[in-house]
Image 1 (cartoon, rainbow, N blue to C red):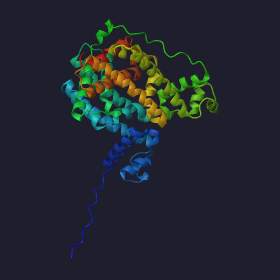
Image 2 (cartoon, one colour; image 1 turned 90 degrees about the horizontal axis):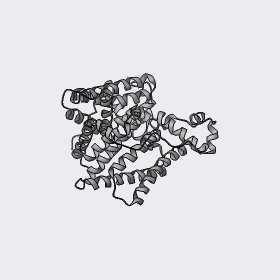
Image 3 (cartoon, rainbow, N blue to C red; image 1 turned 135 degrees about the vertical axis):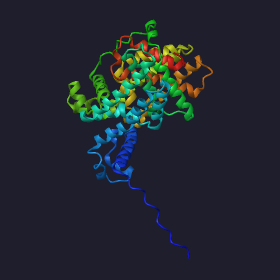
Image 4 (cartoon, one colour; image 1 turned 60 degrees about the horizontal axis):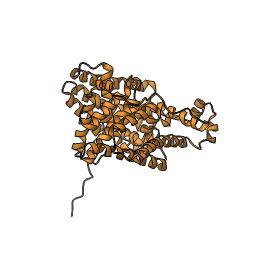
Length: 394
């Protein structure tokens, strides 16, 4: 007779610290995929194999869990930069790239979801990220001592935009080649010669979208500004109504739901991109990469809030609107990639697409993040960085 089988060994019980780290990591992934407001404490508990009430032994509420999720990734970046600052710039960038590849949720949580933290929790996150930027900038200035502090932060912002690509995009490149391209593009951002911007002439970007011609357009304009500052989930119809001078229910004369306002905002941005694409195709000329860069930068600077919403709030679009938006973005990426391949025909198509995404990421973040949009020569400075990334040379 066969001997009775013994039950499988029980998994080791996690310590309180290990459980807290597990919950933060699992929540980070859920917040990245779905957005903060679509994830409950019970969701994180279920994935960790514990009950909802058990989560409260580690976090007093969902906001505290979000802060821990953000910090769990930011701690890795701070460690990488702290160690990397004692080595070469290539070592530092490689270390930060590895964090982004290992934790693709981290950069999106920091930019998109941290807006939902109250001051008590957001200030420590902001302070920690400021330390990271200061360390990174300080290492860059040791290599380039002529750079001012703000110039160094400007270049670091471009580099981290590139290194955040795994948070928002997928690629057909094999991992080792993708990592190499991320590092290469980030280093080109850091070594870009901003002095060249003084020799460049780009179109004036001071004029923005014309004033809304009717109340419906005014609602869209106002909502875009609120979504940009607070995030889509952090804004209600009443908030939009109060800002535009309407009672919340009165907005329903123009839009059935808040989601319809978001769709209208995205359709406006997509329409601008589609018009530029149609003009390029109708012109029948060879694609001019310099023109692509200057036109996009001009549009982005004139429509900073709309760009910020377009980059950050796609996950809240209804399926039909998301499909339309993605189709427009794919068309734009194809045009840029063809233009790049026209100037660099030996470049692999997959590599070209990564470089285009890297250049666009740098443009988008330099326009929408922080105070950089107020720099006197912001348009040509961004162009210098984007062209360096695209061409593979400073």
